[in-house]
Amino acid sequence: MNGLTHTEVINLLIQLATMLFLARMFAELARKFKQPAVVGELLAGILLGPTILGTFAPGIFESLFMSNPSANLALDGFIQIAVILLLFIAGLEVELHLVWSQGKAALSISLLGLVVPFALGFSFPYFFPDFFGLAEGNRLLFSLFMGTAMSITALPVVVRILMDLDLFKTKMGMLIVASAMVNDIIGWLIFSVILSFMGKSGSLSLLQTVGITLLFTFFMLTIGKALINKGLPWVNRKLAWPGGVLSLSMAACFISAAFTEWLGIHAIFGAFLLGVALGDSEHMSERAKEIVHQFINNIFAPLFFVSIGLKINFVANFDLFLTLAVLAISFVGKILGSGFGAYQGGFTVKESMAVGFGMNARGAMEIILGLIALENELIDEKLFVALVVMAIVTSMTSGPLMKWSLKTTKSLPDPQIK
View 1: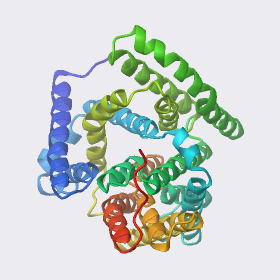
View 2 (view 1 turned 120 degrees about the horizontal axis):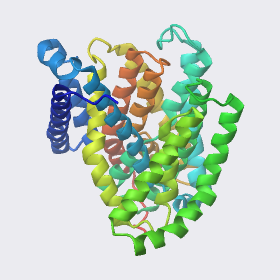
View 3 (view 1 turned 90 degrees about the vertical axis):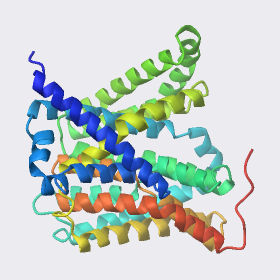
View 4 (view 1 turned 90 degrees about the horizontal axis):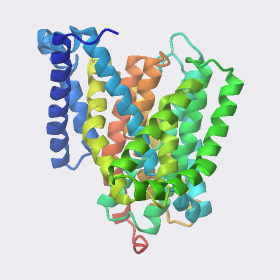
């Protein structure tokens, strides 16, 4: 087996160092303006990529990111691991008992917050495929993807916004979080089925793939979760802490990811399900979760988000009208759907608007969806750029709009749940 040459190793290390350094600098800059770190990391990638560095200093860009294919292949391996781990920690945020405790209200918000944006995201691309960039390909599959991309909420972003607004432990906060959890699980399940329709690389038939995916989902959320819950106390007692639980958690994550990749859907779905099953265990301590989060969010996540900017020229592929259309569909669908679900659950109109604004945060999830679709040639670069802009704008505006909506209503959020 051939390894990297001396020059390629140096190139890979410089790539990693440059990406991590600039990601941290821009993430800190984003924090100064009270924006999510992902915004700064994406800007770092745009600076390093063909948009800026490739335009104004093409020689440096070529030398750093284009001259060594083997080093780039190794970097791509890091990025693939980063995506899997990002979905793993997104799954860790899901607490199934919290979903059950919120009952019908959470189900109403999550389902309407899924169905309405899905319907809008599906309909417009289906009837206007040329405008949304479908040149050749399956119009139904393209529209199904767009519906899914419009409907998934970024749970980690929602949690952070609620914490910043001191709403996380209120009834409204718990309801939004529970709704986002249900939304995520259903949304990723739909996306896994879409990937199976694309016939990526699995050796199974479409019916077998969908059937096994549904069975695997049911298994992980029931029997698998119970087995993890029974095994964790032994791991915590017998193995070094936190090394034992972290190592075995990562191993289980990669096995689950490998299984869903073998099915022909995507490794991220297996990682997400394992994260849900593990995170819901009463024996997975908050401290252990925090260690995992810190490691992934500060090492692997920045590499992924910076890599987005390396792939595409955001200026050359920016389409104003397409971006505005995607933004309009995303805002209208999610705010109307989730807001009406909250209104049905007994909230006032202004409080329902706040719930809709909270559920509108997209963040990393839509970017990951878009990148997978782009790599599988389901969407073009212009639509991908529009989806990235949508993810950034919704993440940046969700918190301020929630705050504005709650300030304009005379009724205050429910007291904090102890």
